[in-house]
Length: 376
Image 1 (cartoon, helix red, strand yellow):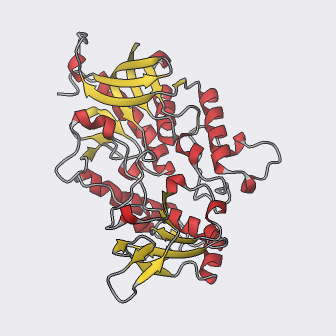
Image 2 (cartoon, rainbow, N blue to C red; image 1 turned 120 degrees about the horizontal axis):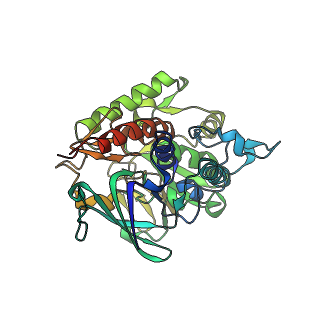
Image 3 (tube, rainbow, N blue to C red; image 1 turned 180 degrees about the vertical axis):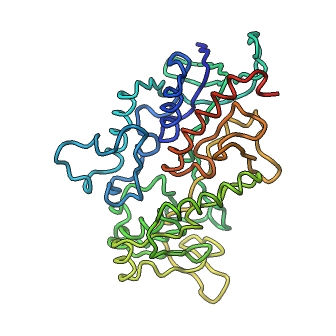
């Protein structure tokens, strides 16, 4: 099956839906927009958050443009008890219906290239060829402009440490975590210095014997996360991608905001951090210094994700250092490729950043599509 579109959007999470909304609002014909999503239903990566992560404990669910999140909650429903894995997909589903965004799913994109055999239409050299597999088999989308909004959930990162293959216990990533019950009564080592690690420690430490290790000392903040603080953090990440460097972590700039759950975990001693171990043994983890060895039944790698961009490899976007040089008003446009935008990469990786980026992407991409020879 082959589809021709003015703009193709890959990914229907916060970033993809925001971009689709603004593209339609700016006059893009609905027939000229194709939105592809790998998941069987709405919700993006939120569909796979652990069941104990509720709306009261999640770090934040930002409204999509034009529809407040509260409108998707049932009348009288207490939002604090609703699992995020249920509430957010329901919200996205309602948003797609209300905005008239027809998402094709499940469609998994394998490869994106430029031009392609058989495309002889005027301007084909600057057109994108998206190769994918959908419910009815192979699918090819040819599009003049491309918005990639695939996020990072499909690329969990686990650093390599000597002896990992010898460990007789269980190793799991944040992506695999389903709540504290399966870890109850175990000796659990949680690795990572971000919000996910602290969230997991806060609840697992009530059911299991936990040990927290991080590569660098975690930094907590008593300061409220103000819009100005958010802008400063995003500006640092934006500066990196504009220089072609791999994006850094926003949390490394803002710090981890204290809340009552984290304070309780601190009082219980769960947030007493140890430096990173140097090796993994059959029965635990080991340090090179006199700290010695600690037994472990389970190692939880709360070590984050990497941008899911492998399908863009044929475009050769990465520089020698592994980063992608970005430009545009909010650093979503790939340098030298005005018809190609990445949302969810760098400064637009947060839900708030994705919304802001969606507006800028729509304006810049439609301008590029209306300009003659915009890719030359």
